[in-house]
Image (cartoon, rainbow, N blue to C red; front, side, top):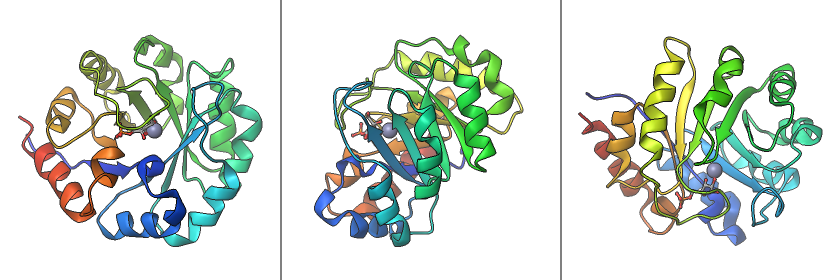
Amino acid sequence: MSREVKIAPSILSADFARLGEEVKAVDEAGADYIHIDVMDGHFVPNLTFGPPVIEAIRSYTDKPFDVHLMINPAAPYLADYARAGADIITVHAEADTHLHRSIQIIRDLGKKAGVSLNPSTPENVLENVMDDIDLILVMSVNPGFGGQSFIPSQLGKISRIRDMIGDRSIELMVDGGIKPSNIADAVQAGADAFVAGSAIFSGDDYVATIGALRDAAGKAT
Ligand code: DX5
Ligand code: ZN
């Protein structure tokens, strides 16, 4: 089975001193989205950047900004991320007491709404929002850091979510530990979009790595 997949380089592993150039480089290397990991040092044990940095890199690419909010609360800040240039805004089901309301806010801002699940979170939390979202982000590592290993138990969850999606046009994205050597397993489970941070930015040849991810995804049976 060969399915078209989307590749979203995570700039968490980019050279922060040259962030704009790094965004441009992965755009030119064939990225579909730019994945932007926002961490608050509270929901996750790490701190990254917020709207001003996103705004500063917006002009370096026309590719969609896929903003992954690992912050609690998220709702008060959604408009700031929309203004900064986000195209997709993903909130964590665990961080949001009123998940449905946050999704509504994101859509009212004219942006695509995503929901992310930590590895320990069951997929049934999605049941009552399935008709209101554009993207599901399955964490295949515990969020907070790049360069961790893919947690294989998430493959079963990916395939159960694929069944839940049915014929809805929801993207099923996987985030954490994705490499050319394991992307086919996630494609086979039903994912169609992939975040890759360290796999891409740890080398010098972004074209080659993005190509290797696409080739390996295409080999899924
Ligand atoms: C983890 C982030 C990921 C991370 C992925 O909290 O959400 O997007 O950057 O990095 P790799 O691909 O290195 O696991
Ligand atoms: Zn992420």
